[in-house]
Length: 372
Image (cartoon, rainbow, N blue to C red; front, side):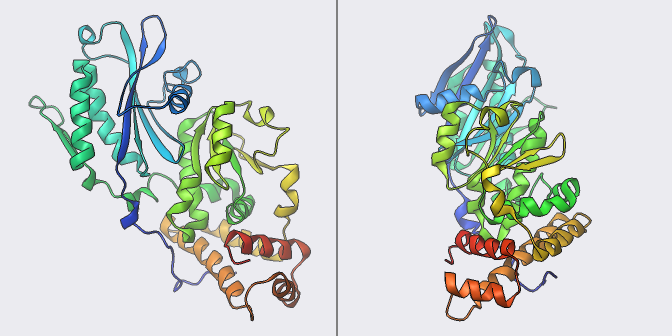
């Protein structure tokens, strides 16, 4: 299947991507090793607090990884967290050894909120005063900017939301080409899973690797627009509360975990359809979903195109090529005489000489695109 360069690439509405900050929470680990939620504005409910504590870089499960910045999602809100493992002025933070702020927003832009959190962490590490942090938060929330005077020679404590594009955040600091290079011909399984809105769990011991990989997964279906990013859950710790919320949050999901037992813990459920182990570069389709992952000649052709795109000149070029594959399939369906119905799809598949697996894929693809 040859991509056509003249087709429209995406339906991403960038004007609607701008949303305000939702809240801020502070967590501290004291000299006795206790991790606590100590402050938040305007407040945080018990469920969200429990999830934030579970995913905290200072938790017993993650503190050894020393992963300073991470982001996750729950209840349709993004949570951006930056940890400080040392205190600049200990006397102003008595008994506090480590801390981190969690900034919540409905906007996906890790770089924008990392820059703001760096200012907040620096101020709190020096002053240990949440009143100053609240002032920063309110300035950022109401005006989209904040400024903290710094001594000569030190970086300015200045932040403006206008300096960070929500559009660029959708394609920044991740690489579709890297995914295609890592999985080669098996990339078509990832492509298939995203087209059919399957539940995907991605494991690695490295949070950095997980978040970079998951961030690029929407590029397999870029024509669907920014709504795909709302299916991403870049970090799960495998608690029953997380899994319960995950099942309610969206019709399908792409989730990441650094918990090695996650797969076995939920092996007797139908929680996920596809499991990836990034450290082993392996993937496994769940037994209950195998029929939907059947392949034919069409899939082999697409696999060839995907493998070629691992050598594309840029990630933008790779995204365009994959998007054009998707759009060409949509065009075929939309050109079916009399519209897409079970009967017309059957006739179409027979005319195309599709295998049973290919015909099944086209039915499921039509359902995913709300054409059937």
